[in-house]
Structures are given as C-alpha cells and as structure tokens.
Image (cartoon, rainbow, N blue to C red; front, side, top):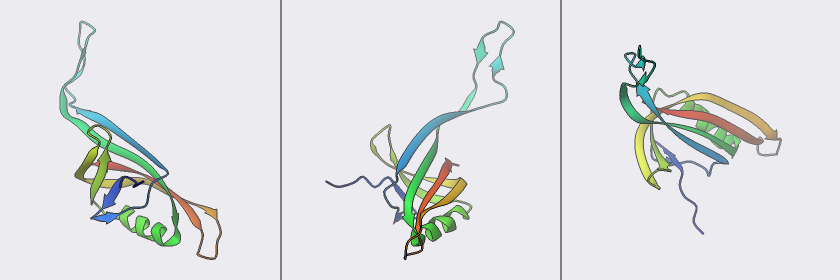
Amino acid sequence: MAFIQYLKFDNENLPLPTSYDLDLSDVEADSGGETEAGTTQRDVIRAGVVTISVSFSVSAIWLSKLSAYAKKDKILVSYFDTETLGVRDTEMYITGFKSKLEKDTSYRGLWTVSFTLKEF
C-alpha cells in the first residue's frame, strides 16, 4: 500500500505526518458586522484561505531541516487538499514551531515537531 504524500516544501518530500489538520477560513473586510436591524452582514474579501496544523515524529536530521524551513519568510508548499482529494500548490509560512525530545537514542534522539502553515 502506498502512502499519500501529504506535504512537500520547495519540492522536497516531507516525512509522513502523525497528524494533519487542514482548515479553510474566509477573510472578511472591516465593513461587515452587525446591522442596525440586528442581522449579520459579511463582506468576504477572500474565501478558502488554508491553514494546516501538522506534527511529525522525526530524527535529528529532519528536525534540523524543518527548523530551517521555519526560519524562511515563505515556502512553496504542495499539500494534500482534503476538499478535492488532490494536491495543491501555494505559498505559505510557518508559525508556532515546537520541537520536543521524545526519546534519546544513539542517533541524537527521536523528536516530535509541530507547527502551523498559513497561506499568504
């Protein structure tokens, strides 16, 4: 059985994630809100902005690679789109990068890395 390639950063295949949570949200203008009649008015500027929360169990080598990606201003990301069940390409950036040592090994440890990708 072949695994789905959930993420690629700058055309580099990432390891299989332990969790993958894709969220689509809308960007609304300040002109929206509640009207005098008490109804809600939405002025959507952009629909379907992607946010992906992901975590990995990785070696020290991948910890180093993912840490380097976290420092970049933007990354070309190919991600598995849960809406179309296909791969989509977009530019994103990383926020909330966390790393945690799970087990010390002779290969500099097994690490849990988690972060959120946000679409520009």
